[in-house]
Length: 358
Image 1: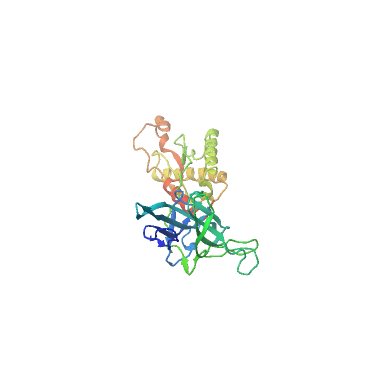
Image 2: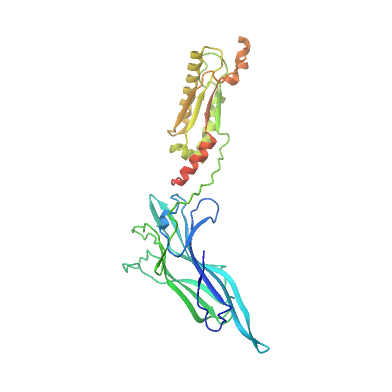
């Protein structure tokens, strides 16, 4: 990035003084780390603001920054020799910012706010401000869907005094529009600085929303207590209550709207022990899964994407036990598992937020 220079006002040593300025457009996408921006300064580049903002529900802020870097020196007579002496130097910025929202393909801007950073510079010689230059819209209606401004530098004769009269005014700065009552939003949101467009990169920044999975655990396991082929459904009251509690936790979590809107699938597996033939055990794992799945769907109050797998006895222990020990010995082999997979949950949440989910 390179600075532009302004002619030094009368009364200061032009060889040892400078006033430099640079204009930068910054977009805070409202995603990722606070203050993360994407910027481009003059001269003009192709693209519009709408092509770099992330279309998500949180919106963000566009800033037009005038960055100042200066040094003011005067010549003083020291023992008959003229020598430069610094009066003041520093860096500051000022400009306007516009909040925006992005909804259904439309980029909508709010009214402009002026700012200076540091906020108070009353004791400094060089001042900067953005002043409103147009009080009506282009049709002259006074609705003011545009926020135009003129950026201006002024110089004080001494700290604490009013400006001395020297000023430097940039060409008009045009900001993006906002939507007046009953009106339509301006779609692009470019910034006009004199004869130059100040615009941003066309490429969409690759910012990934930071997501955190708070639901714990991400799975529910229903055990079955005997090897009987009739033991294929939830029969204990405490087991049903446990399922209800887990489903309630899912519905209270950030994952529920993601599940409800089809971004995140639910995996349900059925399992059996090795006490029957392959066919008998597969059918038993399937019936168990179907019955638990039916109860789950009756509680979730949604029509989620469900991926099923009936495993039969593929994952069962291969240890042979006598019949009187099988109910307890094979307990861990007879179950149905309802699972939300963490990697899928994070990916689904990120996609949901990027596409405007709330």
